[in-house]
Image (cartoon, rainbow, N blue to C red; front, top):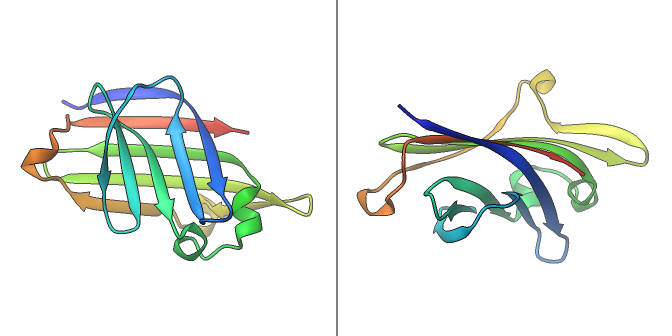
Length: 133
């Protein structure tokens, strides 16, 4: 049975390098796992507690200014014996208009997935995080 971790988080966007970072607050970082265009951050209890997405404007096909103005996000990560799946939802504000970048109404959730290798030492778990800027 998978363990569940819930908490509040924070979101940061590096405009210059086009890196979007989402992470849970108050977790002790231990290590990172690098995949194609994202890095998963692992805490000292072996939960995935954050992600960094490189070339975020290309990954989400969104303007950098929109990524800079994200004010709400949902982040979840699940790990089983074979896979890691990260799901992200964002809402941004641009010129005082609310823009759901990734939403159920568009029937689009950004998924990043990867195979779990035996040397990764991850527990079967689910992480859920809400971010309010």
